[in-house]
Length: 264
Image (tube, rainbow, N blue to C red):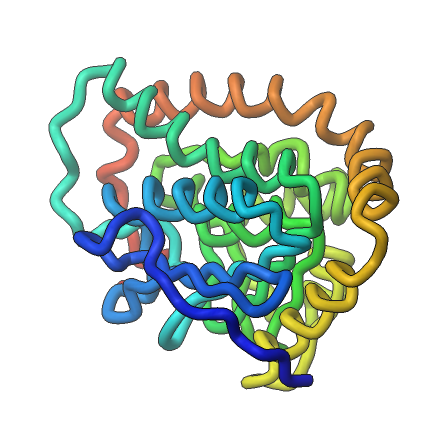
C-alpha cells in the first residue's frame, strides 16, 4: 500500500547520519543507518535514535515505523569497536542512554511498529520488542547472546520478554542465546506477525497508517491500558538491569569469545 511521503530529513544531526527520519503522511519512518555494520549499536547510533523518537513525539505524528537499512535490523552492540575506557558513572550513563529508547517508545502516545529483517540481536532485539507491534520477515533472526559473551540485557527485556512468550520460553531464550527465525518468533508470540522476506517494511508501514488513521485519543488510551500492567514493572526492571550490566562490565567476563554475535 503506497502513501505519499512528506519529505525526508536525518535525525540526530546531519553530522552523524546513522539514523534517518522520514515523514510519510501521519507516520514517521525511522531507519537505523549503519548498514556496513548491520546497524550495530555504537556511541553515535543510540543518541540519534533517541533524537528521532523525540522528534516524532514533538511533531505529534500518529504512528512510528522503526526499521533498519541494509541487510539487518540491528545486530546488537558493535563488538568490533574498541571498547571505550569508562568510569562506572560513564558506563551507567551510557546504559541509561540505551534504555531511553525503551522509555520513549513505551511513552509515545501512538503505536510504534518495528519492521524487522535480518538480525535483531541483543540491543537490536530489545529495540524491536519494546515496540507495540513487531512485523518480522520470515527469515529474520532474533536472539539474546548477552549471557554467552559475559554481558547483560538492558532494555527492559527482563519484563517484556516473559510478558510476550512466558517465563519458561523467556528463560530458555536468555540462558541459551539461541536464535529464532521470524516464523518461529510469530508462532511463540514474540512478534505479531511474520511476513514474506522483503515485505516487512511495506506491511509495517501499512499497519502504521491504518492505526494512525484511527481516533487519536482512543488509540492512545488503548495502548496505555494494554501496557499498564507491564509498564508498571518496566522501570523497576530497567534499574535492575543497569546494576547487572555494571556488574558484568566490571567482572571481566565480557572478554569471553563473541562468536555468538554475527561478526557484523
